[in-house]
Length: 189
Ligand SMILES: [Zn+2]
Ligand SMILES: [Zn+2]
Image (tube, rainbow, N blue to C red; front, side, top):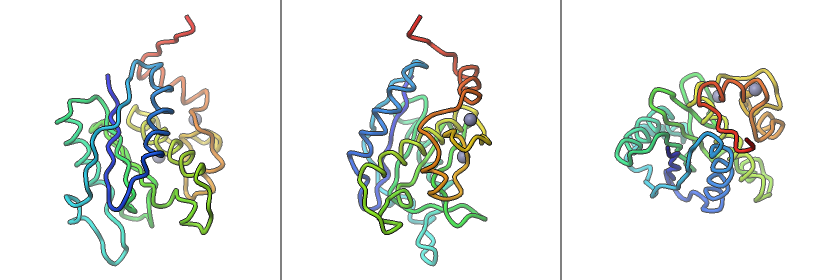
């Protein structure tokens, strides 16, 4: 089983961020029998029809359709898109990411995870935030819902403050649900 990471590029999706996500997700999800691989990048060009020039943002759900299409072509179990484009959904000013368990696809946007977006500078912080959002959206793909525990990676991020407050992984309750939905291969046995 494979989780494919697909860069969906507007200007640039940072290679070191992709590698950090691949490493972290790879280590965690290997417990469930998944391999993680970065798939060749694609451009946002095919998605310009969902670009809202007034907002300067793309409608997120169409990214999931594109990602699901690539998932089918590549023959991988789950696909996670990483884009530098800023995304929104109806009724939301912006979204950090989006997932659909039926499409077995997820997307995260780096646009509002960048410290520069908030007038700050810290290269490591972007990687850490991206790992959290990747874990969060993959959790949704595997059937997890939002968690009331503000330290759990499945806690909903209303703003970057929530993302920075939460940890990199699932709380005990969410982990139990994940184990039930995926089947846990505990390599300590
Ligand atoms: Zn969520
Ligand atoms: Zn939780």
